[in-house]
Amino acid sequence: MFRDILEFLLWGLSERPEQQRILFLLFLCMYVVTVAGNLLIVLAIGTDARLHTPMYFFLASLSCADILFTSTTVPKALVNIQTQSRSISYAGCLVQLYFFLTFGDMDIFLLATMAYDRYMAICHPLHYKIVMSRQRCTLLVTACWVLTSLVAMTHTFLIFRLSFCSKKIIPDFFCDLGPLMKVSCSDTQVNELVLLFLGGAVILIPFILILVSYIHIVSAILRVPSAQGRHKAFSTCGSHLAVVALFFGTVIRAYLFMYTVVTPMLNPFIYSLRNKDMKCALARCLRGKVFFSLGQ
Image 1: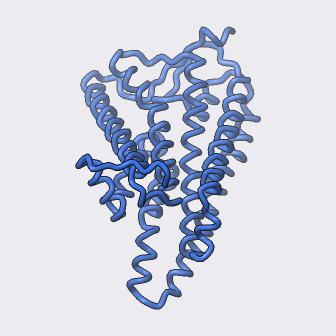
Image 2: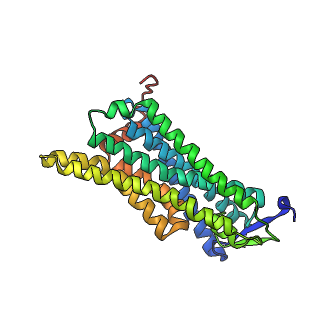
Image 3: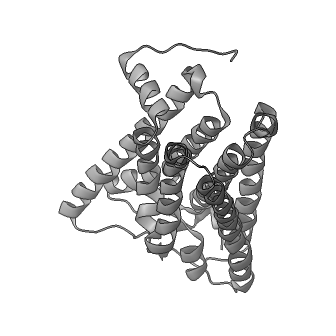
């Protein structure tokens, strides 16, 4: 078998023409909203000096990851719907798989990093600026990219080792680990073990870090004597908690559609609508009153 001539069929969407038109418009609208919303977040943060803080640096990184994550799967689905073609080449499938895993895991790691940032800001405010310096924040984001790339590379290489006997049907609208292992002609025991332990660790470790961070955060907030002080502290974490709940909830309950399309689309709305500084910065962007502060 020659891998370079092998194709898969992405059979995760409806075959009915009337439903395909609806799906095309739905996916297109959600993709445009996702990209536009997250780009607006990045623009607002990059052009407003008051938002040049660790929390917003991580938020901008999350928005970039969401744009790339959605762009890995949705454009191909749109092309397939429009052209009435469901095929994807072997090489194209592996490339999509690698970037899907990279950017998907990047969201998890960034959410854990943002939880650590909130932990330092609330539990150790006197050391916050020293610990969360620009160099440290850049290092944390870089480490997230490196780790997710290594994880994705491991899974992709293990899929590359498998044999696929003929044109195969994947019951999804994108290439993912589980469906690819199911249509393989090879023994997938190693792949399954790596997915269980490495994939489980990628989700479980950040989740535990987030959980531990918020246990300390809630404990510290409850010790604040004034109700106004407690409300202010909680308000800085509300957006992040909402995104964490949305992310892990959809990973567990509705992986295919919600996780790959809906969550990246809702993130910018959650952060902008619940954050006064973001609302002000976005309003200035929309009015065209944007000032670049490169040195700050």
